[in-house]
Image 1 (cartoon, rainbow, N blue to C red):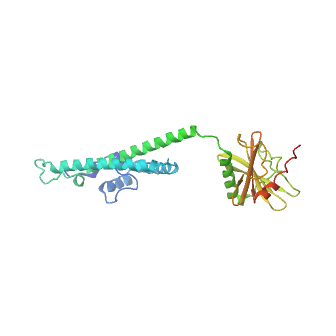
Image 2: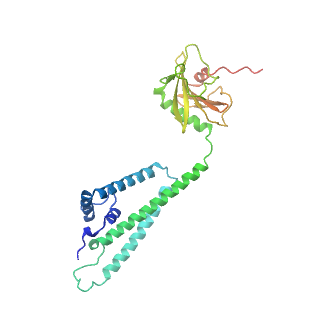
Length: 290
C-alpha cells in the first residue's frame, strides 16, 4: 500500500516540521497546513511552538557567550552531523543491497525517496539532537552566569566613573530639564554635597537616571558664566572612593572632566563639560593646612 501523509499523527507532524522550515511542496507540509486550517486547537499549538522557538532564539542571542563557546558548539554540531551522515549512509547501503520481498518486485527499498516514514523519523531524530544540544548549551550558559554572579567582585571606582561619564554625555539633551529644588525636593538620602561651590545666579535642577543598575539622583548645575556640570549622587558604599573631592579631575574624556568622593555612605561623582579649570570652579577651594 502506498504511503499516505494522512496516516501521520498531529504530534509527529509538529515534531518533524519546525516553524519557518521545509518546502511548501513537501507532502508533510501540505498535510500540516490542511490540518491547521481545519483544527483551531492544532493551529493554536503550532503558534505556541513558533512562539517558543522565537523566545529561545532571543534568549540565545541575548546571552553573551563565553570566549570560544561558539567554536566549540559548531565543532560539536559538525561532528554530530558527520556521525549521523555516516550512519545514514551505512543504513542506505544496507537497504540498497537487500533483496525485495516476494510480491513486491516493483517496489524499491532505496531510502528516503520512497520511504517517507523513515524520512520523518530521521527528521525527528535530528530535531531531537539539535534540541538536546541547545538544552545543554543553555544549561551550561546558565550555570556559568550563576557562578559568575556569585563570584562578581564589587564595582570599582573607575568602572562607575566611566559609566557616569557615558550617561552624562548621552543625556546632555536632558540637562536642566529636571525638577526644581524649591518646589519638588529630591528623594530622602540624596543630599547635595557641601563641597560644591555655588555663585550668585547659579541654578540647580534634579533628575533621576540609572547607573549600573543603581538609581542615581543627578543635580544639574548651571553657573552664571554658562559652565555646566552634574553632580551624581548614589546611595552605595564604595570603599575605594576618597573621603574628599580631588582638586584635579580623576577622569577626562574629550568633553568631560570627572572626579569622585564619598561622604558617609553616599557616593558623589562630579562631571563637568570642560577641562580641569572648569572642574575646579565647581568645587570649593581647599582649606588651608594649619
